[in-house]
Length: 634
Image 1 (cartoon, rainbow, N blue to C red):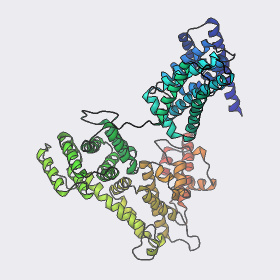
Image 2: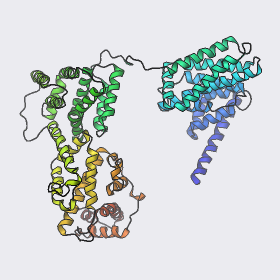
Image 3: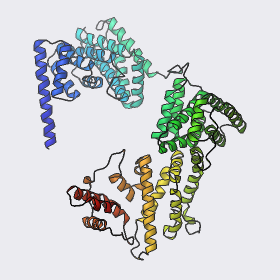
Image 4: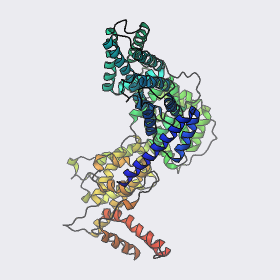
């Protein structure tokens, strides 16, 4: 209750300050600029919500039957100077429904016209969809004002100047607002976003048109009638709005396309596990918007990949770039051709690579960095996916070798280039997953020694497979390839199954020393593999798979595993069994060997952060010497 009362107190202080300042400004007849300066000074001392400020100004401006034009001008200045966001002001105005006060309505119509026709789409603090909805609500409110005024004029059968003025000014405001092609596009988006609201909007428009035809000619001047008709015709055209068939951005000369480079970099580094479909759609949309030719587009895609390979400083980034270039890019090109089939797509790819071969310094630098012929590896993958023919590949390779200017260098046979390793890792991933997915009918066969098989009978073989994956940089290559072909989460599911098996203790049959050591190894290796995958590719690998929700690793990762270099506070959790924390702490302090038999390793992982906390507290208070801490760490 205290935070709520505190917020109310702050709100009342802000409200009183604004009203005091407003009274002084009205009494001294401040100019708009003077009001803006004094308001910003006040906001530095007493910060408040923009919506609350707008509500106070509007409430004070519309107290009587006539608006306070000075306060309305202050509100307009606050919106123009972006103290109050555009959408906040317009949203507040559209909620005003006292149409029995026509002069207040006229004052608000003038403000709406001023705000909406000077709307800054670049500097807006709201997102695009909010702006679309706000503009639609604004036009709808103006239409309601016209309809209400028409009904008043129709009922009295006599000219009523104030309501005729509302019809005239609101029609003019709508016409000016929707003149901008940007506004038309945003209204079209709003129409497509929420069909229910658009039906209400459309019904009001129909009612305005119908009521206009029922008003006697003497009751409504012909000029106002013509304005309403013209405005309604303009609104009806928006419903027929269609995206332009020609390119929005005409590109005549573009040596390098930054848009493609950025999209490729985001996909390769930030979204390595994403499906290729959304990326292929983004590329196709960019192609249409910028009116790029397919050969040029293929050239830019490959060039962006090679630039990424050159700039990759960290080993992980180099693997991600190599996986994207040699495993994912051919699939993207296949998907693009499926979305927009072309009879000569093979020729267009050849032309695109021909354009790429003009960038001799770039290709030479890539070859030197990776110590291989990068174009050759890419052409092999394109040929494998039937994107180009063998003859086209040979011609391009011949041109590349004849134009290359890189210095001759003896290849290091001991170190295989990254492209070669990542390409070989892809079928390895497939064979591993095929083994892991051995169906239930093969569980009892001699070859079924994998994760889905009876782990209790195949621990030795399983440990051998996992240890082989950890040799050298094999594991990083395997998970990079799995991320590129979309099977990384499936791979992680299998590791979780190992981890879940390894945490189980055979209470009834007992556990031999060998079995306990094997179980500890399985838990340790699978746990560290999962930690590595999660840290490299994000916790979404674990948190989005339904198979993970009830597992130990899912619970541990959400509570303890650091994300984005941010550590999680263990004070938010308490140890389930304090005696086990104390027992583990005692074993570490005495440097005792941990007993593998009947040990629940998941409890060890859960309790270890609390043990580390106790050690740190003791070290800080002088109860443990640095030597004791080193013993615990070892």
